[in-house]
Length: 255
Image (tube, rainbow, N blue to C red; front, side, top):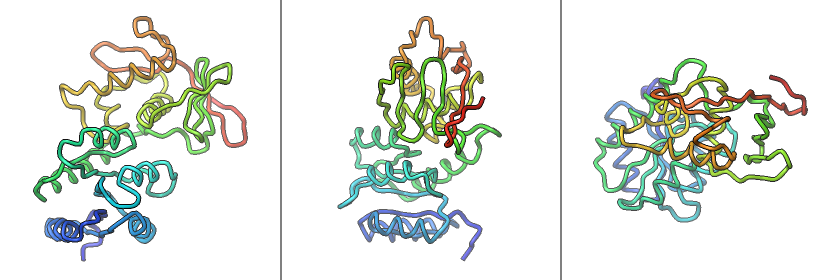
């Protein structure tokens, strides 16, 4: 067994599919562990260093969407492990929800194993090719991030206005705002934002980043024509134009 090879965890309740995919991927030089449900998935993550999870959406008990959401919110060692979701063909809502909950890519069934292998290699390549010092997460000790007249609660994952009112954020909105707050005053391209929030490259016709920025501006009351917080940099991307203060676990603030 090649212990230096990438280790893939395949989570699917169909035993034949698990065996078929594991057999094919191992022939391509990957290591594979399989799991039939969420319980076996959690056990495998505790026992192995996993480089990527292939996760089926439709499973009895905890489905793939729930497992993806819980893993991303866990804060554990595998919280940021790349996830490739397997969805039923035509189930666009599962795909959209999966990406919002933190999946890095998706593949509709039925598919050929060769296509899955290509997707796995692409996700691993992209997630390992982020520019130096560019991260999606706030500082590890951050309990909250203050900017403009707002505060992002990184524990409860919601936005607080100056008057203390709570603004709920979707998973995708929270990740996008976290990226901006981790890199204030830095222009981020659409490709970088796509990579940091969804772990994939932006298609030339993909407007999801622009739509997500628009939704964030609405949450922040930031007029798109005269944006003061998230500004558009023509032909380059977007920039958070506000200063950010980190509030750490002890409650003290620092730049």
